[in-house]
Image (tube, rainbow, N blue to C red; front, side, top):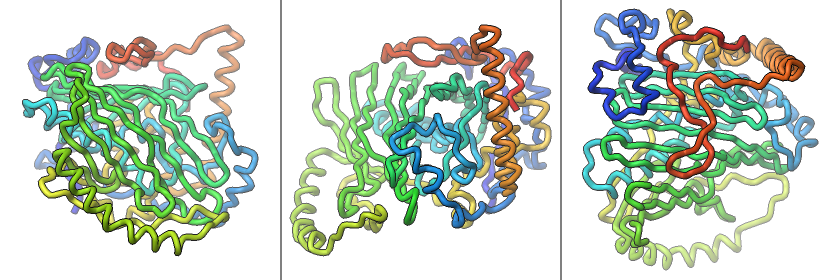
Length: 470
């Protein structure tokens, strides 16, 4: 069945619903003309419910005849953001749109409004942090690098949020975003500097940058950084993805902390996709264990129950490991994708925090997009009159690729990159600095580190003097 949701709405329904939002957000809300912009230019259904598209205009092209090695052999050990990559590596979304996929499971944040216990809220935030990377499962295409000054917005009344993002720097590439609840319950913001490196058989992505979530009703702020991501077998064999690294979520109001270990695959694939960690209070007492798979689900349980379960599991695993070691073999040609082990073994007494949504049946021929991702580049009738002309939806290379017109997409990508280089040279001649529009470099009040802070005004819809980037 088609996914349904309420119409996009730009206006907030009352001044009361803005209570607690940042000053920048509040200024946005005041400047909205609901009569002209309520439906974001789209035509609603008669019953007031709007259907989002559930597929792309055309299936993806075949990568079978592409010689990846001829392109990448000179790039070993280099940062790929500084190298012009052929369009065959891409998926038809900008990185700004990929960032927006953090919001797919916003309901996890919305739940926290009714939670009186800070540990319960930390569980929900931890589940949200894991869910934010779940869409990367099997997504082996690289999003388009945003052009300097490129923007993206998405408003989903059915999920109670709106988000705006801007490419604020080109070298290094930095994408800043600011999301907020339409009801005034939360603000979610950050800036991401994705460092990509090629290591011969794999491409590693390190998403540098801090993410901040403010739960306004509870006067709490949480910060964390995303795990590293690695795409294996970019030269030979089946592409597969793993996430690994430690994610530390800090509640700056209570001192509570959640430490999540995204486990690397390991020699026999036993740890593939696993996430395991714990919540501790400011005195470092462990209060809960979080466990599961970022591709599947996350659970929480009492630490003692978890330890008992792990010990009983370990006894049964010792025999199996000896057999695996006898059968294991070295393979220099490709990093064999481990067999995906059986689903998460649930510890008795556990509470389910989050479970991934199933993907569309045709997802495999549409870049393995989720239902949410299918809608991100949708350009509906009337949107052109509302959105700034810097919005990703107007990028001709992404639009052409979405329509499976690869020759046109490649030409447009090359034209846009050359246009960006020419504009940079022209600014250098005039000794001009690039000026961001919606974000400014500042200090994150919770971490004390440098961050790109939303200055407000985007949703006032005053888009004069924007750069001509397409």
